[in-house]
Length: 61
Image 1: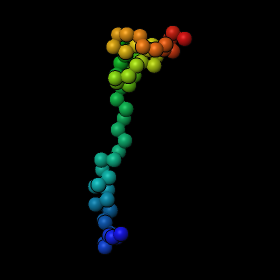
Image 2: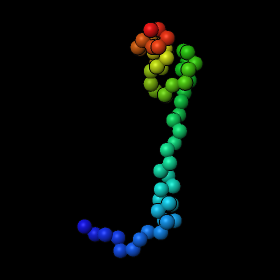
Image 3: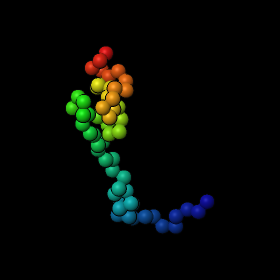
Image 4: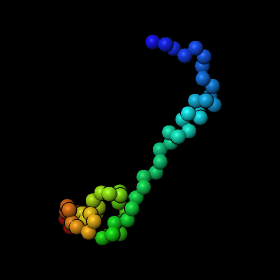
């Protein structure tokens, strides 16, 4: 297997890794209970998704 002939500079490696940072999680607001939740997922607090109750949420237990 071929190996690199010369070492890459620090700048070249850091430039390549410039886009590897972890982005913050985007949250949306539940329309039923106004709690933050992941977009396109059932609300873990109330169990509603698109105006319909899908599961039993923490509020209903």
